[in-house]
Length: 307
Image (cartoon, rainbow, N blue to C red; front, side, top):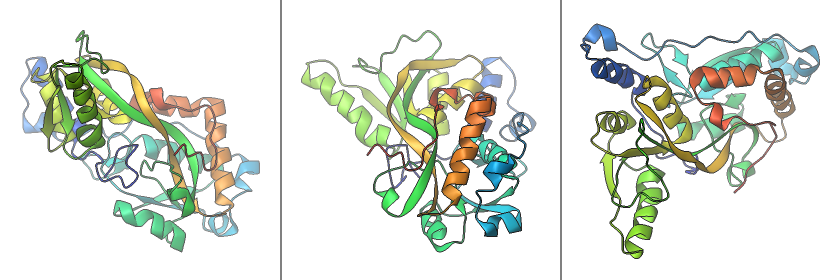
């Protein structure tokens, strides 16, 4: 599974981050963490009510218009974008946004779970109308499918409140990462080498099998900072009840996009639906509901890859 800059997405964070953070907040408050208090992540946020825009809905391919459904291939979990609540319902920022897009288009999104690397081939074959799994829009992928952009994600560090950590000068600091992510394999090693090349102490990289464990280590003070994909970090901060805050800004950003079949008229319909939600403020509201507003974009485009 993968981060924004990992085009095969082999390092996408897994685990039940929200459930763990709920437990951590209780622990910090001196409460018990009984099974009943930590049964699962948030079930939902306040959904927006997007209404149909006929001139945009008219752009849909006839097959989708006639069926009244938009078949969406999705891979979970990847909090907060797409994951399951304790009842098994697929929720998240991406889900709320796609549901709003469906409202604008006058169709109902139908989510079909899939292995991540099978979604684009299924879109090419027509099994799915669109993919929705935090795909990075890359030049390489644009050779296979078109993308409609809807977000910008990068790397973001978090620290405990008042930690004073500078990601560009973290020599000698303990930094938590999830194993095999780009933060583990590329980002922290490069920053650490810059430290040692300058005669300073190396960054002490602390690897965890899941993002949950990395967040746990930071909240409990076992590390000084955490590095992860920006929406993952933003959601961890939102759910920490003030225990965590950003350390520096988002860097190495790239667009997320919805993959669709090359040349499909669905691209224009999706792009205009996203832009409509941006313009009327509902897109921003959805992002704020999930704490990921730092990556919102002013304009949706078709094929906006930067590399």
